[in-house]
Image (cartoon, one colour):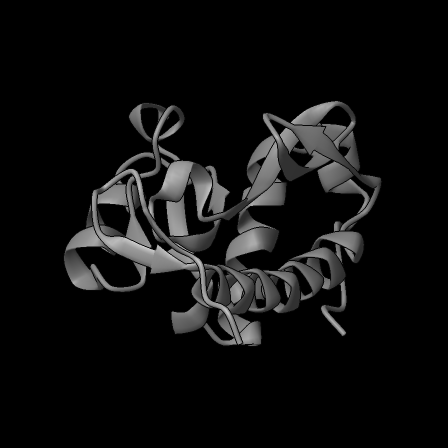
Length: 146
């Protein structure tokens, strides 16, 4: 078997087998995120900035990130209420991080390898509640992550 060796943006060696493994893991995690997001009322998905992104009435409530710009994260980025981002990152830095671009607006990144389905569903539901229009939230906004 031939293994192609290259360099990542960070300068460390990588090979195509490592990238395939990451890709397979990313696909598994994307299925998890899709299943949970699809349970939210009026959820739609489309590509935005090259990544699957989840909307409620044209407003983003979750973005999947599979090693975005070789950052090493297979994660979901979601909005968080004021103050929650810092608390989550300080409390559990292996699970939560400040994502690029949207982190300055309080969004939080969640490492999918470090998060159970139940915890992930709770965070995504809270993100949906932050973004969904008031009338839609008032209609119950109940979901079943399964």
